Each structure stands twice: as structure tokens, then as C-alpha cells.
Length: 417
Length: 116
Image 1: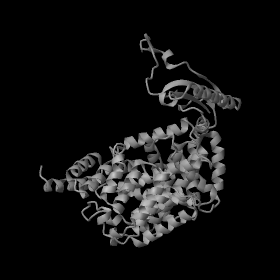
Image 2: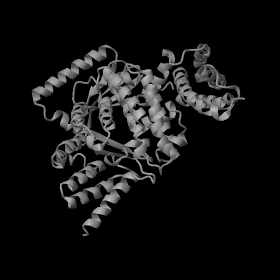
Image 3: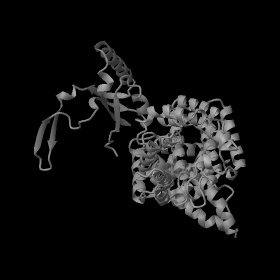
Image 4: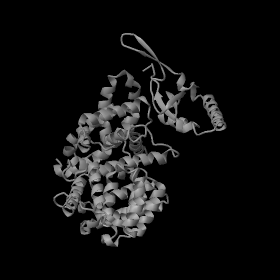
């Protein structure tokens, strides 16, 4: 018998990777997402029983496929409509029994196809997120529900509806062709970054599943980088995530309150991890096809390489925001650019840049919070207080609420009304 | 796989165009339609008379009917035509209909296959 705790860690990693591969293969062969997932689930349970005792098989994918196949054959025999699939499945299983190199083109395609189908633009963003975590990430439905703070029935419903649409509207199961790839890849990356941020912005008071979302998204992105090694944007996103994670220890105090970038204790940053992420970013940039995620990572990399906040290279950051604004002309990017301008040329300059954004960002809490900070610096403290109160009304994030409440409270003390 | 495409027009899309510009656009649509019908991708379809010509019949559970003037969905977009297309999957449908030459809104709905 193999040592249990030692096996558990590697078991989980292997299983995670292999079940995504297996789900992809079964979806391709059977064409039925629910049945494919059920079979994978059964095989995963069997692996958890057998692997700690017998050791992890030399080819875990083939082991799982053999197990899933046995169950699939039983199940499919009972359904007339699956008969023709049965022959294909048997052929496929024989193929999978012979060892295939990890990351081989055949196996790789299945996981990629799965990811692209989960993030198809014909599905709602919420469904894309739930389906990606459930099907590619291998999270159980209750875990997805806890992570997103919504009832389990809601997530289950979302998954059912998404899979029904994939089937009834005939959303194809494949990687888009060269012409369609750029916008579709951007969809996938957007979903992954959204999942990451849900976890990254969670505070210590949140459920562990919620905080683990950041690691889940990082894993999915690293999978994408391995599967599409010539695409620079997934690499850019992975570097961006890792640059955030490397500095995460400084983001909260011991009692869980949020620390702004300017006040963070930079000795808590993981210098080695920052260096590795910067190398990854450079690898992406060398491909010579810049994109929004590479530029965002470059901005964070400039922050991460400053030893002190005062030493931040703001001119470089403004230049990068100019580039990002060309790639992604959104008011949020314009806001962030204005704040960098503020650091370079003073709060008055930044205020002039952000005022025109007010209408389009009226419901964005960070617009009001940033504006409050700038107003305070130019001595317009009453207007600052109004803006902080507006920001507080608009955010649901407990850590941000706490920070804003503290600001409003200290302003109230200074100028009793 | 068959899909029904509802072609909706908005005031923003068409109203600012001059009469000759609108005529040119109709010609483009007509050419585009002919090309894809010949390729077997468009099975049938029609432009519809303006929404002001629409009549709605509501049939209650007891079978009683109520006839009223106007379309049954009031919205910013008005259905101005439809096409039934036959393509392999949703991506192919999106690809085909993304080539629609006018500034309209298109809704793609799979047609229920009675063999299922």
C-alpha cells in the first residue's frame, strides 16, 4: 500500500488533468454532455478507490478510459439511440489503451475543444463560467455554487440550460478555425480572468471554494498555454495572474482588511515568483503579437519591479495604458490611465481626465472611489465624501466596503456636519 | 441542421439612410440572398410588409379569439423578414448570417426536427 497523504496530492493533480481530457474525449465520441460527465465521475470515484492502494497507473488517462468504457458499454446497451456510438466507443477505447504521450495532439484537442465550447459566445457569460469550472475544471456543482455565493439549484439550472442549448442549437464541439480564433480565444481568456478575479478579490472571510477560484483559473490558463504554445495572449494572461498571486500576501492585513498598493509592505512580495512571471511575459512579447492581456501584465510587471511605491515608473505605465486604450477603448481603461496620469502630473490633471467618464461609469464603484481620492488630494473634501459614499453604495465586496467605511468615518470626524 | 433567422430592423439602422442608399442596400441584400440560396444554404424566406400592417390574434384556453392591430411583441426591433437556412451547426449559421449586408439585428433559432 502506498503512503496515503503522499499519494493524495499527486493523485488530485493527475486526476484533474486526466478527467478534463477524458470528458473531452467522451463528449466527442458520445455527443452527450450529461452522460459523458456521469461516466467521468464514475471513473474518477473508481480512481480514488484504487489508486491509493495500487499506485497511480503509468498511463492514468488510459486507466480512466478503460474504466469509463466498461460503464459506458453497460449504459449504452440500454439505449437504442446510442447503439451506433457504441462501435465508435469501443474502437476509441482500444486506441486509448495503447499509451499515448501526455499532451499529444489527439488528447490535447479534446480539452481545447471542450474549453472553446464551454466559452461559446452563444452561451450566457454566467453559463460559460459555470460550464468551464464544472466540465474542464472538474469542480462539483456544489463547489461552483459555494464559490459564486449562489444556491446550488441555480448553478445546476444554469448547467442544464447551457447543455441543452449546446445540444438543441447544435453548438459545435471544436476549436474554431484560424479566422474565428482571435475573438473566440478572447472569450475564453475573459472567462478565465473573470473566474480568477472572483477568487482573487475574495477576502479571508469568504468560503475557501471562493478563494480557490483564483488557483482554478490559473490552472485552466496554464493548461491553455500548454495546449496553444504559439498564442501569446494566454501566456500574457497567465503572467498577469501570477504577478497578482505573487503579491497577494501584502494585500490584506493579519485581521483581513485590505491594503492599497501604495501602502503595501513590498517585502511580503514573492520576488522569485515575480521574476518567473516576468520571464513568461517576455516569452509572450517575443512572439510579436501584442494583445490586451499582455499589456495588462506589462503594467502590473512595472508595478511589481518597483522597490517602493515612490519609485514606480509612471511614465512607462501611462505609455502602456495608451497602448491598452488603443486595443481596448473602454471607459474603465481610460479611468486607470487617468489615475496613472495623476501620479505622473498631479491630481488636478487626473481629475480633468476622469470627469468626462462620469456618465458612462456612473455605476462603477471604483470610479467614485478613485474620484474621491483625487478630490481629497486637491482639498475638495466635501465632494470627496459624497463620492466615497456613492462608491460604498455600489460595491458588494466586503473588504472594499470596510475600506470605504473607514474613509467616510474619518472624513466625518474631521468635518462634523 | 435547419435554423430560422428572424431579421429585425431598428430605426437607428435604416432611418438615417437616404432613399438611394436604401435602394443600394436592398440590392446588396438581394444579391447576397441569391448567392446563398443558390449554394443551398438559404432554403426559403421573405421580406415582410412594415410592422404597421401586422394583425395579432390571441387564442384563449377556452378557444375564444381576440383580434388586434399590431405585432405581438412590441420592441425596439421590428421583424422585417425571415429566412430558413440549412447549415451544419450554429457556428456555420453565425458565419453565414454575419455576412448579412444591412445594419439589422438577427435572431437565430434552431428549427425542431420532427424526427427526434
